[in-house]
Image 1: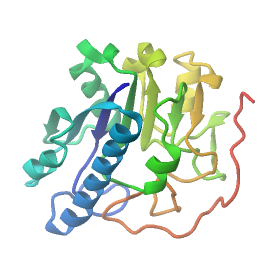
Image 2: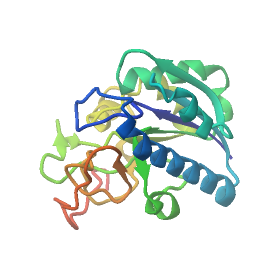
Image 3: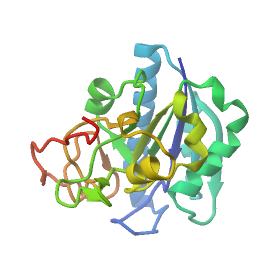
Image 4: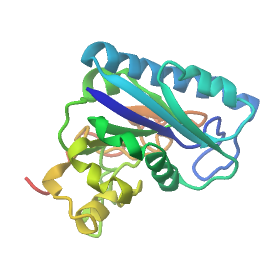
Length: 235
């Protein structure tokens, strides 16, 4: 089994949602800890599932560029470092284009944000490289969890198995992705699911998340939709 892993977004970022401050010395320790959990995740996939893993990094420049890339060296096949922010979806689409000529050799593509500290529960108990459906991490907290009649998803990660690579050029990383995938890309709702069926906001500063926390901002201990279960619309 082979996988292409896209790790993208703003590394060494300081502050809450919307901040563009990055590269300050006080951001270093937490970001490096997050990167080490990424390697722990990759090592787990390699050792438990015998996955052959290729990592592509898309991020923005700081004085820590060399140290950041060095962490991923055992798995790194490519990277792009941008000067100015362009957003998650453009980062994802550019990374797809950079790897397009050999994309079909992979069994799945998995994206996650570079500023996530991955918890052991995520890769020890939840993540399954044999999923045959597109997987979002979760649906955002119960209040406000519907957008245009469709589930409002957590956009910090996305798992795409090979049968859906035909759609990959048109995929957007956003809370409205379920709606866009089903209405604009004609992906069946039965072909989409979540990694965990409890509700959690994507921002771990606002709502406790069992899969990860965003580094260099406080982590909430409050679970706003505790024990509420997402009912899949196709079931």
